[in-house]
Image 1 (cartoon, rainbow, N blue to C red):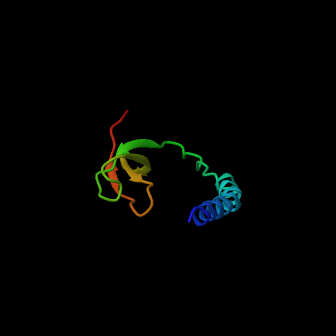
Image 2: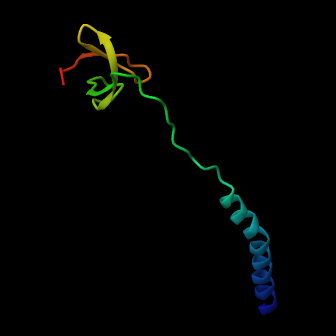
Amino acid sequence: MITALLGGLAGFAFIVLLALPRYIGARRLAAVRTARFYTVPAGTRWLACHTTTCAHTQTVHVPAGDGLWRCTTERCGHLTKGDNK
């Protein structure tokens, strides 16, 4: 009985030693996430966008004429009235 237990433990240790380098190597080679950078158009302002698309947060707005500002968030395009600051 002890021989069977020791054999099972030895087999388990052997399998762990075979799989461990592959697991560690896969963890090291994971893709690194990078930040997205883009140029900001002239006249850009951060204004509150009160739509559910933007979740009522401050988002980038560009001038749209007549004192209005257009949200640049994807699938939004909401027009808002900006202050003269």
